[in-house]
Image (cartoon, rainbow, N blue to C red; front, side, top):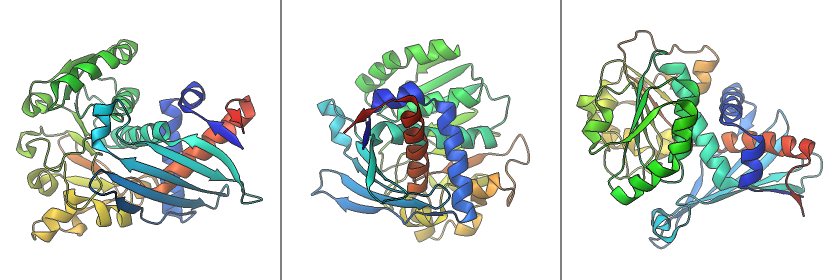
Length: 326
């Protein structure tokens, strides 16, 4: 069995690799080559949520499971708010063949979902980005945004100034690498002012910005929350976006409060969703039709993304002699 930690993953797998891994995962899911039940969530006595996300991808074939928790208070303890582990099984024997740092894999594959959606849906001449949230997944969200679009400026907003300051320091090498100005925003309004790409990756139960102030032609990635009682997007932007895409219909319609709350109030309909990213990649639906359209992508995550990226990292690590044999 091979153990692959965060350093190993980062050494052999780039954000572009992760974006291409997600591209393949979406296509396999839409073509019926994957079985990924909606996650099972356990509310751990009010402390946080622990989720089990099993999946099977028949193309490889590969079976695995991710055990992932969402504990917002971990940040105050200097721990990841979304810790995870991925277990991967051997295709021939069914035995466990790899244990991977699911925390880093989740950060990469989730950032890559936004990166892929931004590449497919945002205007190619996008110059300004906005990022909401500075937790463990924020860095890869920023990295993905910069990987697919040559932005000149990204404004970052977090309600906690100390977290924002720490993130600005942590992201400085990334800003230098891509030649972009990454700035701290004093308010949500300042963050989205004239922004071409907006990404939210928070645990907020309430909308993170005023949808009425989003510019025409913007693209939005809603990433952070995955429970029916929470939403990062307000009703206005959900009902006024021109084109809406999701990662996985079954998962989104079970978990995404961004849609489920306005649906329960009679103000939104599932029919407004244009399709999954896999449908878009396979040409089953159209993406952006006009530069002035506002496009929106909502992701809650599903296990196919985790199994595909874990498989690819494991195969590469085994070929390069990377990781630790147990």
